[in-house]
Length: 79
Image (cartoon, rainbow, N blue to C red; front, side, top):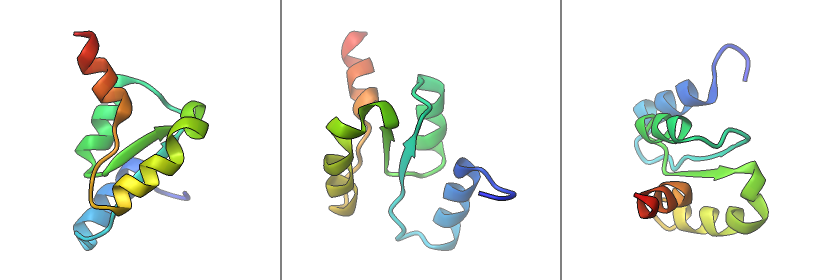
């Protein structure tokens, strides 16, 4: 994305059109990145390493008005 990263683009999209549903598909898979994605206003997150397991479900959930953050749920269960 020339001149703008995904997090900035998501924040801008949410400001310009609150109805936009945003699902991140990224190689980055860390708690810090997840927090940044949530803070950007996105509705979901799929790590490329888990695309085969999560991508179709994530798209369905986000398009259905829900969120999809499976790594956050797993991390909360470990605490």
